[in-house]
Structure formats: C-alpha cells, structure tokens
Amino acid sequence: MMNPIRHLLENPTWPEGLEARKIYRRLHDDHDGTRKGHLSVVFSDDGDAWVSIPDARPGEGLRFRSYAGGGSSLRTRAALLILAEAMRLDEEEGR
Image (cartoon, rainbow, N blue to C red):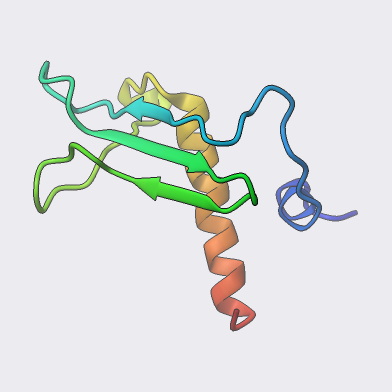
C-alpha cells in the first residue's frame, strides 16, 4: 500500500472551495502581538502557485508551532510537513 502522503502528492486534485486568484494567508504563531508575519499563497488561473511572506521581519522566518508547542495553525503546519516531503522527493528524484 502506498504512503497516503505520497499518494496525495502524486495524484493531485483541486480542492473543492479553493479559488484561483484568491490570496490565502495565515499569521504565524510568534507574532508577539504585532499581527505581522503571514504566509500567503495564491494560485493563478493556469494553476501555478505563488508563495510569499509579505510582512515578515527581515532575516527571520515564520514559526508554525506543533500542538505540543501551543500552535494555533495545526492544519497549516501539517500542510508544511507535506510540502517538505514533496520538496524532499523532488530533490531526491532530481527534478
């Protein structure tokens, strides 16, 4: 049986309710009350993904904590795990 994450990555579908040209964004967990530091993604009409961090502090990344670390964006964090696996597989296969 194929790993479910790998199956998802190799058989992509467009999720119901997701719209092209709509910006989806999520505030990271360690914004310290500033409400700055969003991860944003938008898909163009042809399906290309555009990712940005428009208001992050220079030189710093965004943090999406696990449940044990008090995370408030657990689905976003889970998606980032899947993204990391996709990147690992693409690198491994030389794409």
